[in-house]
Length: 404
Image (tube, rainbow, N blue to C red):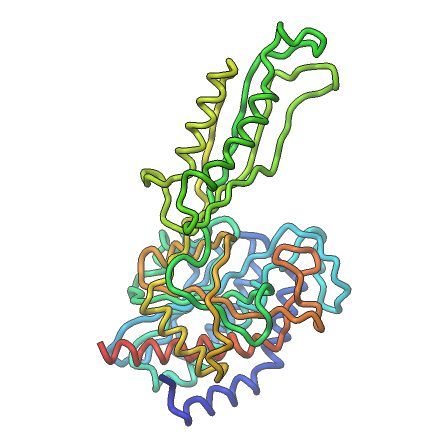
């Protein structure tokens, strides 16, 4: 299923005309990155651009978020497109004319491109508004890295008009340029972060019998926790329990009084609190048992940062139709999922949604570094693909709704 050839020609022509401006906007955002909920400059540029489009309603949301509505004045559903705007606390090592001007802050996850792509899509959708049988809501979100989507939802991003469906793109260096990753079901993982404090009794390493050693207990917790993902949870349900920080002790001949462990749990299914497969409940059982066995006390804190992004089957099909039309080759569309976290789940858990990946990995352009790396960059040619996907997804969605 495709949009009409005339409409496709108009879309592609306008993308070509706007491409230099889009790339310039992306590079400007890259030069002046802003951390979560500090995106004042970025949001100001986005808001000014949207307000320049006659008839588009625009408002701030959750502080530095921006929400706009393109209304054709025709009755019909509302489809939401989302882009994230925040940068990361990473020191850029790329030698680029447009490298970050701010020490210790960098767009190392393509959010600069996401913002520029949706701004470009907004311009074209506004020009094509007479072709839209409904409304298009554009959401420019702050603080994706630390759950800003929930704050946008709390501030009404899904309301007035109520969104009937939502779509989001992530430019993705693990996929090569020219490939789009789409699948139904879990595509981005839940992420729970944890902190465990194991408390024993400090003492002299020459007299261990007079102490209660928390290091032995901490080591067994790290080892035993691995059985949760390999022995307790269905292997067809990806689960990763990772310890990333161990801290304890002051000197090589002193048994410390306590050890702190920190890490994260990621899983591609609905395994939240109360679920029989919740990894956090299983982790606490192991911590409790080992501390009791070794006479230690413990404190365990678990904080949920993101829930899993679960794509709706029908919306994944809509995105797939759009991808076939955009790329022209079904073989270039692959099923793809990631164990990284993504707070688009705040939208996907409330309305039928699809979150998909546009490949931007290109070794010749040095855009094959992983996300969050200090040398991360994108293949800017793939931004055209992203804009066309935004536009085609909108029109494919309205065609899908028309047939229901």
